[in-house]
Length: 118
Image (cartoon, rainbow, N blue to C red; front, side, top):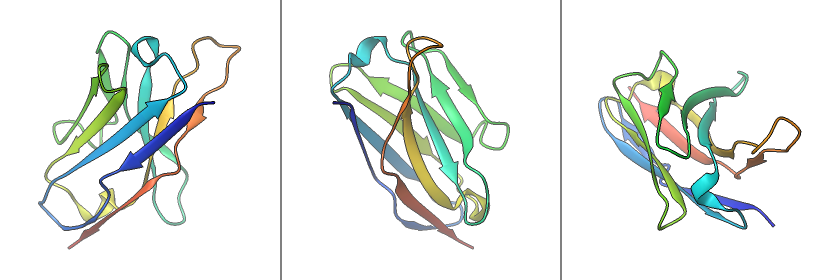
């Protein structure tokens, strides 16, 4: 059974930093591509960053240069370091396991709340 547990969300002032963590179990983490999504109130869920099993990364334009996704395969954990936070970064952040194939299914964590006050 796949389980993704996010942590690290908090209330922070604009310009501050947070690091989110997502601990995975029930999967072969080392061969899994992972991603972070976020959903602001009243908006659709959007992709924030992805990381492949080899460590290649990709970011939404809105977070490039401010956020860094990384992974620790020994700990089955993916991270999202968020710097220079803005009020528009406020939302629920979700960890996502990318399907291994086009026919497979992804898995979501329960989310962690990030609130940036201006």
